[in-house]
Length: 178
Length: 356
Image (cartoon, rainbow over all chains, first blue to last red; front, side, top):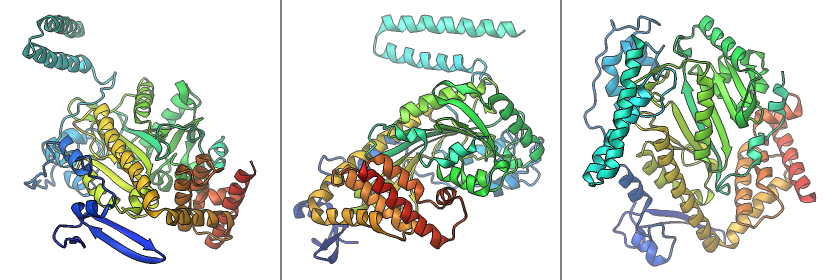
């Protein structure tokens, strides 16, 4: 819809005005809305749109449609759900379905979760094993690289020592399992 | 069995506390989807396995207390009357899905109704906590604690790469849905929600009207929540959501200022007409009640209506729903009878408030 005032730009402001019981719809572009003295949500130079899109630099549409081949033979050993059933219902039958249908899951997860396929959140204490420590290790290594880049060598040395201690902990736990 | 406690009070105890920005944000919720590692998901519909899950949860958690949530009580779906289920749905303590088709479903509800843990919904466990106002951080922290407590006695289905394994691919990873319920009358009136909703959707967040469809949200209530559950940590998801909610709050505040300046007496007229309808009507439909309640809520926040508390408005919101009305009337009502009874209840409640 074009702006009522300049009849050139796309109208971005729409509202209904009631004067003495007379109802009028108003459609204006940003500039004209400014000039007319209507509400202006863009006056600090930060529209919601700009704010939102800048937060998500990777927000690109998944261009190529992932085609998933239907495999009637593929079936979960534990609950008996077939891959076709999974595709139709969109629901897994049990946790083993994740292994059974593994080759086909990445495109699905990527589509649903904006290109992500790997969990980075909470780890349960029980099932997590030494995953907590592995995560901590990854974090420290990342920190170390950043500190070295900043030439903060004293801090870097401390982080290095913590990595060393953590590595020994992980190693000793592995030994304990035998 | 004290299901009576949960179905007789319209307002959950936690709603009586006032959180941050409660002129705009009604409540914050965190929900985790969790499954037991050794049992097929509820989607497999193996009732024998699932009834064992329910028994186990009852044995381990019924009448147990945890921190601020205090005591949990297990309520089994097949022991409830349809009307009782409906009230629990209206109070958001269970989902319609759990209420509808379930012989093996149950729910653990904390004494203050702040936490409810649905058993055998789409996943074995759906752990959710509610806080009044804009309190996502607090809700997340306490939900994580509650999750740890449950994990002490249950081994969850978890995979290093995929995270918490859930029935639906849309929940895998953190299994977390964070959401806030917002009252956005000024953004709705100025028709800005139509532009804002698609923008927010692009970010892996969802906005939907609580009652009614899309931008035509009845009662001008919206729920904003995360869509994405994989590839970000719980904290990151909550931070992303929070920054959008913060933006919406600021925009709504500006829009409220604007409508006050631009519409002046017309806005006052609209608000007081709605107030008049609530205080004087003899028959009122749910839709009209929602609209009027929304106007009056705005009137209270703008300082136009005095002597009515937010608390009362929250109560009226639950009153207007069919399940609660019938629970309160202690009998089944025809739609017409409901509209009369609803009008009576609202009138009485507001009168009570004015006399105080």
